[in-house]
Amino acid sequence: MNEFKSAAVIAAAGSGRRMGGVSKPNIKILGKTLFEYVIGAFDESLVDEIIVVCSEDNEESLRALCVGVSTPIAFVRGGATRAESVSNGINATSRDIQIICAHDCARPFVTSEMINETLASASKHGASCVCSPVTDTVKHKDPITGFVSTPARDELFAVQTPQCFKKSLYLHAAAAVGDALSDFTDETSLLEEIGVEVCYIKYTGTNMKLTTEDDVPVAELLMKRREKKC
Image 1 (cartoon, rainbow, N blue to C red):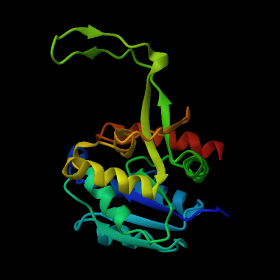
Image 2 (cartoon, rainbow, N blue to C red; image 1 turned 90 degrees about the vertical axis):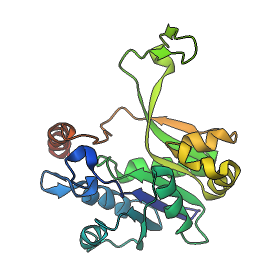
Image 3 (tube, rainbow, N blue to C red; image 1 turned 60 degrees about the horizontal axis):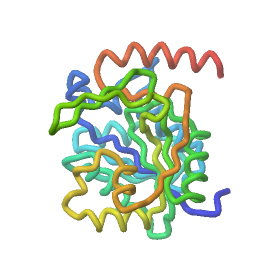
Image 4 (cartoon, rainbow, N blue to C red; image 1 turned 180 degrees about the vertical axis):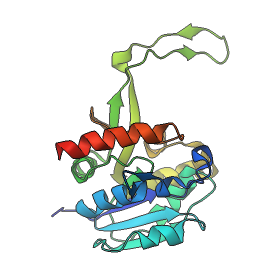
């Protein structure tokens, strides 16, 4: 039992344009939709409520997949951008919610353990996020001079979800940036804009995000491997 009240905000309103027109939450991996994997992990976690940010096109199908979910759940409409969608979800949480856990439905490998660890870290530090080491050599091109540099890989990491943070910090940050909210591609960037120090939890396991159709067979292979270990 947590000493704080928390809510999950699941971003599931994507159109699936890069997935051949299929809404990402409805894509199936080994017979289960991405949404089922994600909602199952959050239902097993310590969150007190779940807000699903969906579209008009996929709400009905997602609601049908929530049969048997014991955690209180609500559905809200997404916005024009991811930032707006998450904001809509956060604004729909109960008044007594203290910690938000934002997660992209396109990441089906999330686990209840991962969620609970990130929640606990956010309760302690204010904001916390799962990340992974960068294995590729990354180049940076200065937009003004055109100079190309190579940052050290051990100084880089890729930001993922879940991202957890105190609701009060998020609301303060959103109010501070105003109409520029949609410019932020994730919540860690928004919080850091107002000086919040985010605790990054390095995760070396599989937590891939499905972006294109080519990612589906890779995800199936990784999911088979994970289920064999269970």
